[in-house]
Image (cartoon, rainbow, N blue to C red; front, top):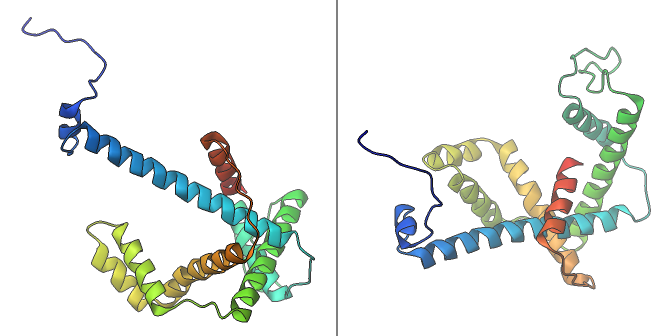
Length: 210
């Protein structure tokens, strides 16, 4: 027997920090703190955004264009029913996204689709009335931010967006939505509420699941 080792608790010290690429333990703690704060800020933003959208959705209902509703319903149904067997609809000549779904699930998909279309129309109108738009600089920043998420493939990502107008539209949509949300928050009377992180992430998980 040349050596005997046993498991022990890892020492949280400057040596550990240096092995992880930091100058000392303080630098490691600061980096972890910034990462945690960033995660909290992102989750909090999503919760605030959900509250604004819920408030808009709770307003007076109005009819939405059938074509937009049908298109959004297909999108929601496909997400809820990804393993559906594609079959051509003899009337509309497109795959039936809700084939095999229960009546309750179809009703839920219909409600989600109507909510999304209604919110989309409301946000668009708020933006139009208040001259809110997405500038080239806004889009450029978003594209570069997306490229940064793919280390080593930045140039490929940039070229993809430059050559794909539909991708550019998809990235500008969330920017416009966020700018309208920010405008609403500036105009609204806001009440601050303190919540713990468990409540924050529970609300975030619930929103993601729906």
